[in-house]
Image (cartoon, rainbow, N blue to C red):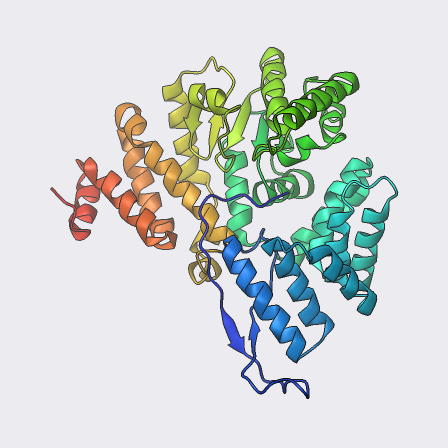
Length: 425
């Protein structure tokens, strides 16, 4: 799965190396680039990964080691280098026990029927149980094989490692807290899926919610796995095979690339919504789920409810839902991760920082409905925003949010704040 966030900033930092270059190299200053991390933790633009790959290549040439080679390959993968697979295989011949290289090789074996993907990942975790990338992949490998016990072990490993920041976990907690009982939540990528699985399966918070990952719907096993797990029947093996064949034939005939959500995922989401509606179960799209042509109508006709959009009809009045949601928001949303020093000192490319922007966008979208239906809650939400969110936003979003707040500043508290921002009437 690709880590999904909408706000990307390309930043590359380097720190001075203290080693001596390998004899025979031209005398020049060689610096050690930043360690390459999964996009579920830090996300850069493609050009930044190209630059980092070049820096790690030079560093490995000066100070050859399995650490340097592994970082080079990690950056090279994200950079989309056409030589990546060949270089990775060369690295594995030289460093066959490097967990990062084994993990990267497993990604090339994703879905292979011979079990090589699982073998590579389990070897990586056996060599270094603290290497977290393989554990993330093992979650879905075990899920695909129906091994719920090992899947939960992998999720527990991820939780215990601390690799998921409190800001990321809190965001997912707050999303789950926004949902009706028995809800189905459609998610997009790693940071709105794995933490949700951890919370529902390991922590025991909102186990009634079924989390459906958009990316995994493109596999041949996940849709049937969801039905076996209790989702309303939206397809079967024969219909799924026919859909996959039909879509691929059309794409090949038109010579077009798969859409951003994958070739089959969005078609199956539409079917899930229809089946859930028939069964009387509410379906929500996470705010992190980016819009595509197939999902546009569902989003347009849905109800914007903060961090989620309700895309199935509801018998509850929108006014009531707004009051319930934002009452829960100001009273019960977790904010420790947002307020913590780790997030406040993190770069804007940090996953937690990028997720925080979703709070701001949700609050901005709610301004008019709250002014109409719950003005008192709007004031409470303003207090929540200024206490927990504003200082974690990028400057452009912070400025836009201030402009929206101050467009209607009838309340004395909001008016005073707007005056401080130079936006008071």
